[in-house]
Length: 204
Image (cartoon, rainbow, N blue to C red; front, top):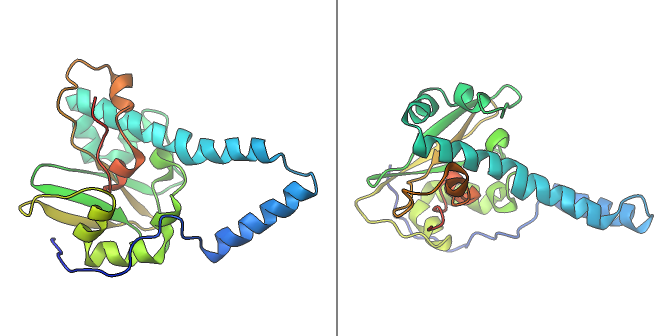
């Protein structure tokens, strides 16, 4: 489906929920009392937010880009294909949706913040924000513009609403000019946002 409605409230990428504010307050208390090393905690959080999860998903995408049989398996049964690479969830079904020149996919969870943890790790703060959850359904082109993406008018946009039992992630379009790159090098081009649908892979 395609939406072209205008919006007024921008996505606040740094917006914090009540729970996140309480977590920050608890973190401050634990650090002040000497129970937690802030540097070690920062490394742990960074690992789960930016390294373990998105790195797993990037490897899945890179494999799909170079291995047609794996690609077809991923599209047909993402849960099993991803599990074959050692990335297993806690029971939720994973569905891979593929971007093309004529169709662009975006993932959201309109009720809370359901997210494909096995391949993307922890959800970013903006993904859980009320602004993103509401606006991406009503004005996906406007939201994409805020993330620096302008799609041609001829490209349809489809929104996928994740749930606790069924979670989606996007197979982005492989960039041009990377035909000679290795699988690991291709994985380095895949960004977390491109697997949510609000970003595109890096250029080689």
